[in-house]
Every structure is written in C-alpha cells, then in structure tokens.
Length: 219
Image 1 (tube, rainbow, N blue to C red):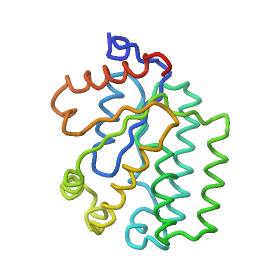
Image 2: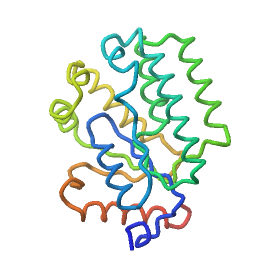
Image 3: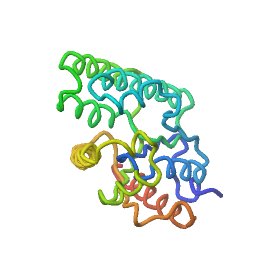
Image 4: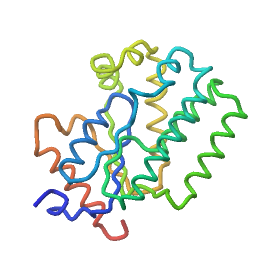
C-alpha cells in the first residue's frame, strides 16, 4: 500500500507546491509524486528562452517572460485536466499573476498596457473548461536568511548574481500573497521541520497532514 492509499488521498487530486525561489519546491514535488504514485509537473526552466535575458534586464524582458510562463503553465493545466488529475505541481499559475507580474508592474518594469494584456489573458485562461483549481496548495516557507543561503549555495548563476533586494521584496510579497489566497485549501510547511532528502518519515508526516485537510468536513 502506497501513502496515497494509506492516507486516503484522492487519486484525481492535484497538489500544488508554492513558495519563493530557494525553498525546495522541486525537491518536494518529486518526493511527493513518488510517495503518492502521482505524476510530477515540474517547472521548465532550462529551455526557457527569456529567463537569462530577464535577469540581465527586468524592464525589457519582464512582459515576454511572464507571457511565456503563462502559456507554459496553461499547457500543463490542460495536460493535468486530460489525465484526470493525479499530479504534484511545482509552482502555480496564481504565483505568476499574484506575485511576479504584479511586482514588475508596480516597480515600473512592465507598462500598464502590458500588465492589462497579461491580466486579461490570465483571466480568460482560468475560466476555460481545462482549468481546475488545485485540490490542495502546499506553501513552503523558511526564514529570509535560509532562502538567501540556499540561493547562494544551490541557485543558478543568474539567480546568484541578482541583487539581494530583489529576493527580499519577493519574499515579502509571497508572505502577503499567501494570506489572501482562497482558491483552495492550504497546508503551510516550514522547511526546517522536514528533511525530504534523507528522512522518509518526513514525507509520510506531510502526507498525513495533507490527508487531515483533504478529508476534513467541508474541505
């Protein structure tokens, strides 16, 4: 019996992992997908044609980068819908809209016309039959010192060369965003409490917490 069956996690569930850069979303996505016998939906970064350009010039590339991410995430939404669920997803489409695009608009890196175009496209996508809200959103967080240390240790060169002020602002915006997110139930996890690299028991503890939320009355 796998953990999905043991803890009565719905086989058609879509579990989304959210959190700022450096908190370990990809690691948890892979570990949970394996434990639940789900598919992993990982963020496609290596072949992104805009990402390195974006880190060199936010103002020039923020809009095309966000449009690219929006298209890629919508294709994943459609794929998950066609499979009938059973996915763990690395980062949500909501973070692109509620944090990244909004931040770059408010900082002047995206024009008002571009931001409205982005928002109109986002709003149209989430109203299509292919779009389904996550069954559960897992929000990973740690201290800002932890996040900066992980970026310095494991981050891509373009992330390591980005000014610290950028990561500080993103961290604060994530904390604000999660407190207003209501599209699905939320499980908040502190990265200090779980070692998904070396402790299999950590994954079972997380699945147990997921089960409590998903199987609670009214979830």
